[in-house]
Image (cartoon, rainbow over all chains, first blue to last red):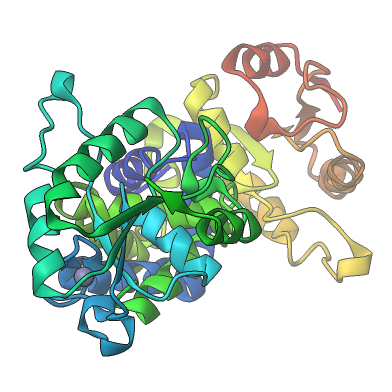
Length: 198
Length: 198
Ligand SMILES: [Zn+2]
Ligand SMILES: [Zn+2]
């Protein structure tokens, strides 16, 4: 092979993507080199564009191209409900299912004393501030049905109790041990509509 | 989500890579957006660099950053042997196994009357020219052990017969129906060393 160094580096970076290993990364790079104009160069351009513009919404933690994301900027989404998720992937899953019309709060993880992840790291104080600032009536906890997710859910509910806001959580339509990002739209819809007081 | 159009386009292009589907492409893009500086931007840069420099070696059909690839440019590789492969992926597989020290000839496919792929499309006349031009003594056919691969091997052998060059093919260490790019180095080494007259 030729142009070796760049191509090997490219394969190495591709191999770090979730779902790709060294062999599939090699095949992907070879595929791209054969589709230079229709895939490789457009991909390079889009990655560069997205990379230069992407940041984190200062209000909710969603990925955004401005300081405040489209959802937080939209008056239509100000319906008094905020859906608390662990990760942007979960927010994407909810948006794909088109079952929720309020705003989000992305924690960016779960509480984990071992990993030194505390309430401040998860923007929980910011969530409490938003209740008054945005006149929120209901906080819907849409955390993963894992031990860490549920521990975090209990912590958030306890922290929000003094504010008097209604705290609910997704119904047990979410399979035990399951992760939101893998659910089909129907399951997400059912879990949302039968949410119960936390 | 925000910055929607570019991100959706990026997911769409990623989903066209072999080994990725829509869901894994979404996860890969989200992963990249979180690793903006360490992965997304370097990947964009490398793709752009490789995309601007990659071309096809005019002599052998290998991918290259110049008109003639490193292998064809190297006097060390001028040992009188040429290994004929269907695809650059197969050339990479041979090079990874480090079992061959001659040059290559990449056909870019197999003969296929249905798909209108004939000898000229596979650079077979160019291969015949190389025998005199490079003083080749042996042509090693390293084509896939598929019906199309073996049909093409027979055609190449017949075309080269008048030149008097020795034509050999990889030994039947290659599993029937198997593809070179999936074999381990040991199998490739055994198949090469026990190659037999064609
Ligand atoms: Zn936001
Ligand atoms: Zn070459």
